[in-house]
Amino acid sequence: MNKDIAATEALKGNLSAQGVEIQDIGDYGNLPENGLMRTQSPYSTAVQVIKPRDLNKVESRCLAEAARAGDEFYYSWSQGGSIIEGNTVGAALMMIRNWGNCAVDVKVQELPSSYIFYGAFIDLETGFNLVRPFKMSKQSPKNKQGREIYSGERGKDIIFQIGASKAIRNVTLNALPKWLTEKTLDTAKQNVAGKVERMGKEKAIQLMQKKAESSGIPWDRVEANYGKKASWDTDKIVAVMGAIRSVEDGVESMDEVFSDKVAVNGEPEIKKKTGKTDQTAETDYTNPESIMERVAQIKTIQEFDNWEKKHKQDLEMISGKDGELLQRVIADKKESFKK
Image (tube, rainbow, N blue to C red):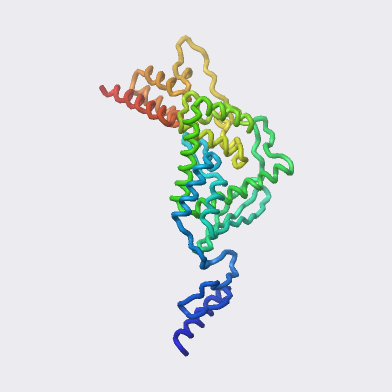
């Protein structure tokens, strides 16, 4: 038997054993341009396309849309003194569309108290497939009064849809190149920052307060997580905008984004009045100026070390230019004890 024919037959046998139906193998090593095979597996192998993906065009289109969309593509929340930010599901869908020749599939497994969504990203052009599970509790988050935020049959539908959206977002952002997702996020964030600069800090905060009110977010919850509005710089305003947006779109619950600090940490300690003034109790640890005043009152290195250790998390909450200034004041104070 001719070597080429033998190789072709061997290839057919190998593919058939894998459950792949051969339509026209053609000349071995010279595959036909219009369709090679049909797969019987859940997700597709690579297929030839008329117009291959152009990464430069993909990047250009994604960034152009991100520059227009701004806060529609950007969300954030405060966690452990740090700002966590990312692309919204809207941004993920936009990148899927511009990536082209791919598909996203979501399958769901229902458990007694939760759903497990299996998001799958299938790149038809390269044959790359990725599956990531996402667990979504069926239990609705509750407001401060203990009532369910998503109640009744409609509430169940909302919880299910939120889980599906998160599964799509998560698998997409893990499957697409990191350089593309990060550039998209940065571009969207720059758009939001530009809007804040143009409208001014005061007007931007007023707009956020209206959005928070319409979304049922108490303003004291916002400031409990991000500090007093008087201390906010542009970066902090952008972060708060992203957090409110995620609740506004229903992708995240208010309690997930704006945790109730009192409920989490217990009732605040009530200080008994004494003849001496308790300077620590009077310090507002969401206000950089108040913290700097407290630093100035510290007399010894031991008192300073104890204070810094106790309020480490509070200090980490102050970011941007205010945070940089505060860190310089703290460093100068620490240096003064060495003299």
